[in-house]
Image (cartoon, rainbow, N blue to C red):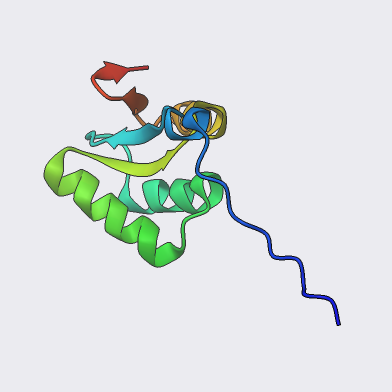
Length: 98
């Protein structure tokens, strides 16, 4: 009887650990309603209604909130879509705002 082949997981590639992650930050303003921000986070960022509601309250009381983290390629279209809806949004990587 032959022994099954076992696969050993290699260590994470250095390139994988150096991937730069970004945050999609939404800023509070005096223009957009809670409902509009919640609807936008659900439709654009694929948040649940509950998650979008919590984000909206944090944005309102803290002035800003990182509503999503990920790669530039994933977050940039979301940022642009939020901005197109009149919501102030930026991408941040460390100290840099994009």
